Image (cartoon, rainbow, N blue to C red; front, side, top):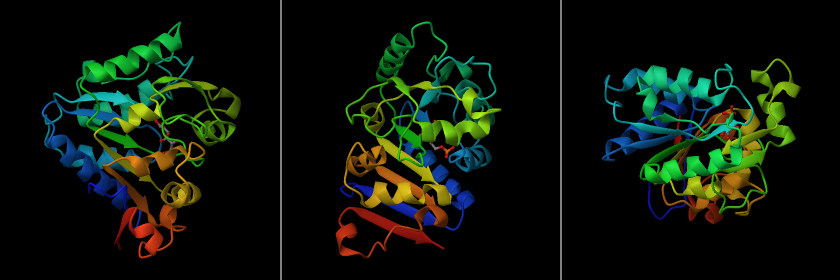
Length: 263
Ligand code: F6R
């Protein structure tokens, strides 16, 4: 990842290759931290990344890793198979052999979710902050569950999910009405405080958000544009997600981003 350039975009043939490269970036960034703290996203985008990490790391290497999930639904039983507690357990903790006591997910079933959100923000700070935050991007440009309009200075808090997000996540539930309406999410300031960001976006459905993130005005209307203000953010894309971005040779883009193609 390059300092001084706001956004690095790396484009790969397919989601597996993008995930493998993102996993290497995560492993490299963690290896330079003394007490590594990793932020993890759920959803489909980072699945190849987690699979690749699990296949390639030496067993036991993550024994002292502290992990913070990006978000959790409000009002969901942590034992529900689609709670982010369960998803993080299934896709990250078990495959990477993590110590469960070091894996943190916001408490969406707390009687007072606002207090739980504030506690979660304090726990991240107490752990020394996040070294590497893994992120996906919503089709509407959200980061975590910071939907369009979320302030860039927001901390971990309770938010209402956009209709588009509930619709996108309906694939994990029997029907759309079963998707929770609210979530606890790390805020945009919480995310931006991570020392490096590894972002993964794959598939046709992300192309418009990737274009807005890369070339649109930096604005709360597209939370992902925040990534362009971070000194160490790298975005791993497949061709489908990158397909709307004009060539990196365009003069108005070259100052703001580096694009590398890995055919
Ligand atoms: C997940 C999260 C979301 C997802 C985004 C993309 O913890 O916070 O921002 O990263 O909605 O989801 P997928 O990868 O399923 O397309």
